[in-house]
Amino acid sequence: MKRKFRIILVLTLALVMLLSACQPRDLPSNGDKKTTSAADSESGDEQNPSASPTSIGEIKNWKFSTDDIDGNHVDESIFSEARLTMVNIWATWCGPCIAEIPHIGELAKDEFADMNIQVMGIVSDAELGGDNEMALDNAKYILEVSGASYLNVLFNSPDMYESLLKFVGGYPTTIFMDSQGNVVGSEILGMRSKEVFLEEAQQRLDMLND
Image 1 (cartoon, rainbow, N blue to C red):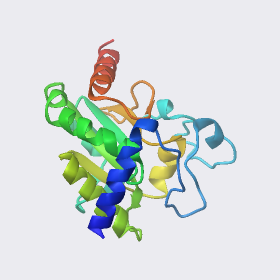
Image 2: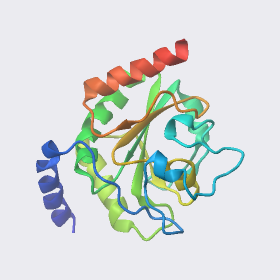
Image 3: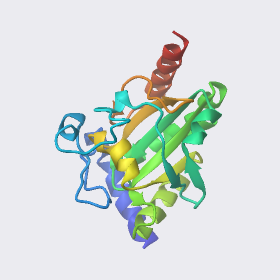
């Protein structure tokens, strides 16, 4: 099975140059919900009246509870461990997502560490408590061969969908959050280079200093 996945991975990466982002697929959830753009999300969805953002950029004090890919519990308290947290939302079937992971891994180990920035990935097709062993195994393999050791967590439905992922219009999507779980700046849709991520991160730090 791993050998077959490796072949698929190589073929997928060969097509990455034609793409910068993947169209969303159905997210695993407790209902028939799909990843949508912010505009689509506003119609007909019930939201928590105490916190009802209509786009990613409006998310404040984001709370979540899930496990990482190794089964360790993770929640919003992680944001307090750094000045900024770069949250990269990706899927194991998305070529552009896979292609940028090595660059993100390098940033997490080197430049970001000096800037007090941490990284958290959300594996959108690996659901906490779901029947998705293959997606979880694929995620672990992708991270291993990419040399990426930063934190990656499982998608927890429905809470994580309602509070964040329903605003995601495609993969990969990257956002930056401050130490309180507030989104800083706008989301980044599509694959980016190491240099661009570094520039975007510095811009977010500058926003916090203003």
